[in-house]
Length: 301
Ligand code: ADP
Image 1 (cartoon, helix red, strand yellow):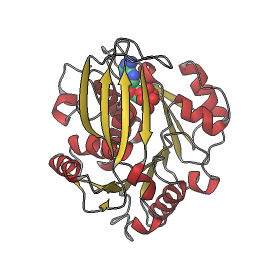
Image 2 (cartoon, rainbow, N blue to C red):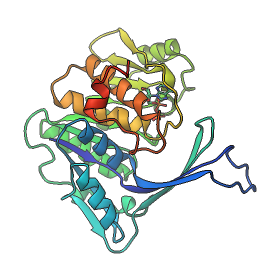
Image 3 (cartoon, protein in one colour):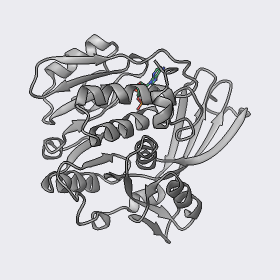
Image 4 (cartoon, protein in one colour):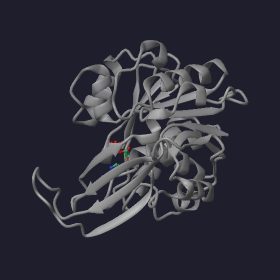
């Protein structure tokens, strides 16, 4: 079982020729509504690859269709709590022809998820994966990470969106998965522009987690384990990337899926890179996430 603690959003995805400038109105070419939020996306990514997944989250009173959609994906939503006082989180996503995007999020019910909503038993058997992101309150992230560690779980933290994390939280993390901007923000540096810069940054950085995997867009990912001074670069397949929305979430869900099957970390990162790259070939977050059969197909090299 993989337990995901995180956010659920209604995603409104609009495609445009060029992103609007301040004061400008542009017409969308296409509009898609779907389930999003980093928590829900990562849960669905892992479920599509075959893992048993439960999601811990809060949604608004308006979320019946979302809960149905998540259930249809095979995600256990028993711990997704409807909150009558508020509405489900909303993300307005605008994507241009070059695949560039801007996103505005209204947290809504996600901001109401509290420490008291976390299941007492976050980890039911030793080594179980608990996957957490930063789209919920910092104290909930901290409590989930520390509880998961205390219960013998394997903690994966995706520090997105970027915000400071205490050393005691990072020390309880087995695998930290930032993108280049989030890594830079955690370390107070500039984002690494190249694979080599990412490697150097990870070697110099004193992050107390057991491993760090930084995602680098079309450059794939770099892995650094605390016990080694080496880094490993896992390149991404060359794909026709039309929309990178959901790539990072697919990466984290696929990583958790692979680790949950006992795959070693380098091989799990390799699978996560392939899954995330697949997602960039289609519009929207969940719509383009791969199923296990698609990842294993020879067409994705
Ligand atoms: P985020 O979307 O969270 O910023 P990244 O941009 O680093 O994260 O992308 C996460 C993963 O998605 C990468 O490690 C890679 O596997 C895949 N990916 C993203 N953009 C591309 C691209 N243009 N071509 C191929 N793979 C990509």
